[in-house]
Image 1 (tube, one colour):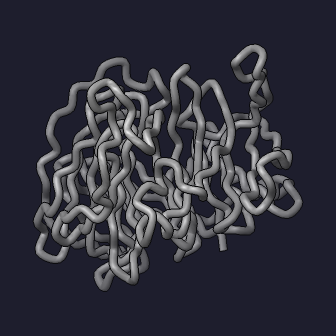
Image 2: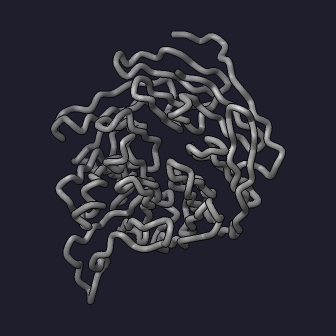
Length: 350
């Protein structure tokens, strides 16, 4: 294991405190950032040039018992891959909106519903449909929809997904949608949600099938796969590639106790090509990760003040980046980022 000193690049930030960042590919840069004053800027990480694209109003949010369910209540920034659209949402809440960055106008106001929104991150991500950006977002605790970020038009019109006259409608889903993460090709979605008891039950489904054919795919389509049961949810997770996903826990569900058995810290790797009964691969770690990323060859686990690098093939820890706490992964630049309020630190992981 290599524990040598890393080489990092630092960009000092002189504007209002940074809240979040998102990878993009634009002519004026490759990283969007959101600041505490509502400013959205584009940074060229190569030159350090910064362009303020516009400013939005971040409404003050009521936060009660922050972190109770493992959700850090905060404004989050998402972006389409081409950087044409951004979405700003409040994790642990219901508010959000989509912005067309070309003329900097709000095209869609988002409402994630008011039924236990404090238990999950705001469900949102961008995908591509026939080469055009699509925004996927929660519109109720148990419903996902897709919209055109240019016009706000709904693309997944379908019947009711909540009780009608005291009866569950067809395709009813008793599930609280959580954080959404598309796989690298955007063909599948990872959904980190929960169901009553409560129990965390992450799931995946075929986003391509949902957007191009079966509007009920996100509820009960044939591609839906439930990955695990756990006492908690909102744990870190990431995709390795289009078929393998990493979950930030190693606990095993005990049906008799209806609870998770105690387990050491680490991660489990689920290969979606394998039958559901196939045992997951587990990688023990010295500390529980609070963020996970992967480039297909390595798993990057942020824990405490450090970030460890793990070989997907061997399962060995190959490097530790001391005093570098990765918060984002820039896949195209092959860099880990530590986005802090007053600076952005970068480390190459090529």
